[in-house]
Length: 32
Image (cartoon, rainbow, N blue to C red; front, side):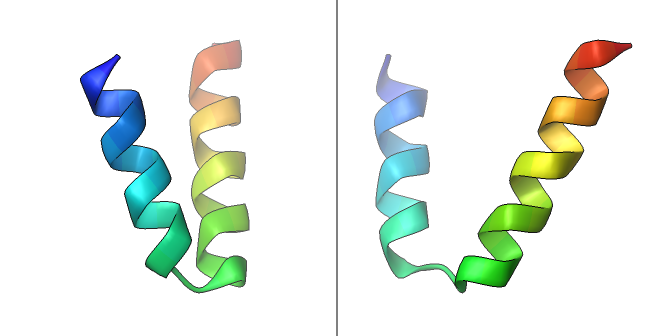
């Protein structure tokens, strides 16, 4: 749960395009 909160804090400060890329990468890795 704490790591999820850290991710949210990061998303607040991150570049939206970088966030989309990170989400895509995480989603691709989860599908394997």
